[in-house]
Image 1 (tube, rainbow, N blue to C red):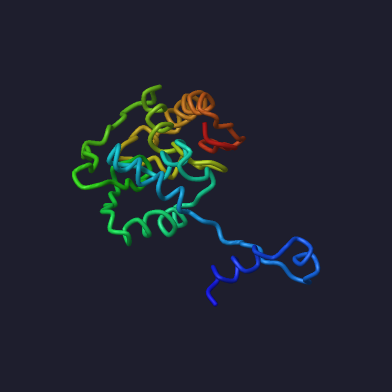
Image 2 (tube, rainbow, N blue to C red):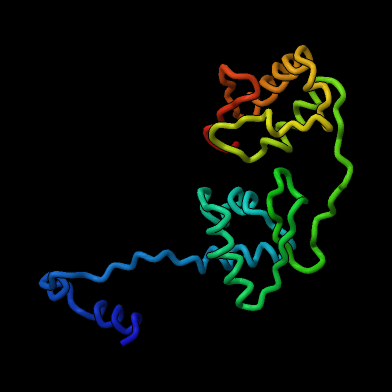
Length: 188
């Protein structure tokens, strides 16, 4: 018998017979069919989608991991014959963009360089480097000396930490006692 035949046979029993049994059939596997169809419809309509966008739109659970997204949503759609391409480097923090043919994102190869601490530099860090992260966030390793040359200067670095803290707190990051370290409980 197939699993479907077993379930159909069990479901055809009366409640009294089911209660007299010392076992029951409980389905524990999660079905991703409805989520997969929602993602497919979005890709057909809009052409591209990232995991963060899929979470924000409610197409997938907000706690879905990237590996689960690929294994349960993207790979099965590809097996069905739906052409999905993967693009890295187009989104902040090198997140992956999934798109249909002809809907790849245009990648700008020019990186903005900030020569002195400023609100613009702080906003760039908030929107592009720590965007989407939750939990404990250490920003310092994300700041390259080529893009933020003022970081090498202690005075400028301290000034930038104050500016960054002010801007990051507006986006749900809580500062800690250590410079360039934040905590974000949930995405805004």
